[in-house]
Amino acid sequence: MKRDQGDVHMERKDEALTATVSYSIFALARSHRALAAQLLREINLFAGQEIMLMYLWNNDGQSQQSLGRSIGLDHSTVAKSMKRLEEAGLVTRTRSNQDGRVTLVYLTETGRNLEAKVNDIWKELEQITTRGLTSSECDIIVSLAHRITASIDAADAPFGVSSVPPIIKEDI
Image (cartoon, rainbow, N blue to C red; front, side):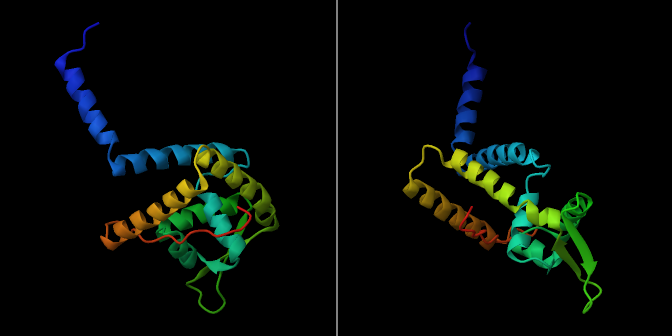
């Protein structure tokens, strides 16, 4: 079957699109999130919830606002996620005794018991993600990701984009 000029033109436009950094980041993030979601489904978590739990494992009893700032999420997203985690029995939320406007988040025993499973899933996710890459290439990707994030943040992008500090856990 013969391809017409329109098909060839569209293929060139697609190649130009997929060769951009922005599209590459989009495709990488989409694939990575889908794999994370698949792996986390085994322990009844949605992608992103494990990040909140990781921050709580490092600093239990923090405010929802502090948690959102640490992760770079807006208040309503954090509140919705915390509600789901609370309904799943992984966290409890209470008002601060010092300031009734502040909601503090605490892990439950069930939430604390998920740490080893989540760490195992993140190890598997990291192994799959970096398969075929050298240690040096992994370091370069991390460095470039931080530089790109800083560049985007410096542009004062809309929607409250902010730097998200890395989660540092020796066992992940």
